[in-house]
Image (cartoon, rainbow, N blue to C red; front, side):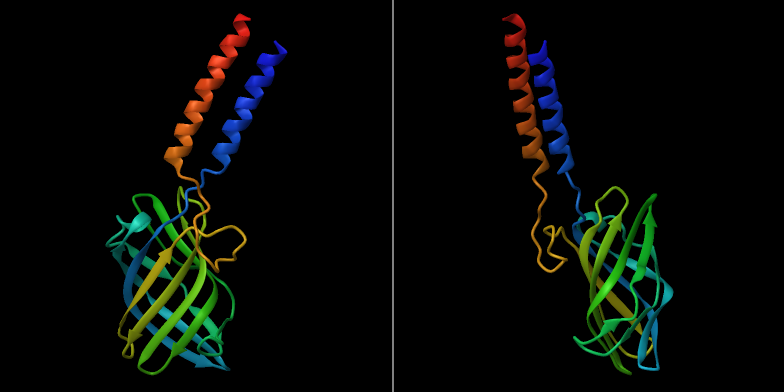
Length: 200
């Protein structure tokens, strides 16, 4: 009886360990289009999108979001170019919902920021969120030209290796299909072994 209990505990532990690594990272990207304005005061530049923007559609986890209305929060920063520093994290930078699923992105730092009277070029990194997915490190960028014109945002989310701080990509998530197949084979073998022990 002790052997049977030990075997069942081992099977349960194997199932739990495999389930724990079955992360569902966000992949793909989405484009937005909208109107914005900028202002500068006391060395702080603020990019202010005029809500709502429109989702132009995307790929991966964003492939069925075209036409959604997107709500933005302003981005304030100091400095310029690669030396630009976010005044404070923007949580969320943008958010929208489609069929009960909420999509959002928290901007945590800037990679570059250049705004002139006739152009905008912003980029940064942060975390993407979608209902049912794991939070995923992602990049965000915006390029446009002309005062108070329509600007387009490009956004992408990919899984990141743990401990990289979003600096290098590389999926750390195992293939779900192969893992499930291996689990099925292992459980089948364990069941046969358990029956053999029971008969002995």
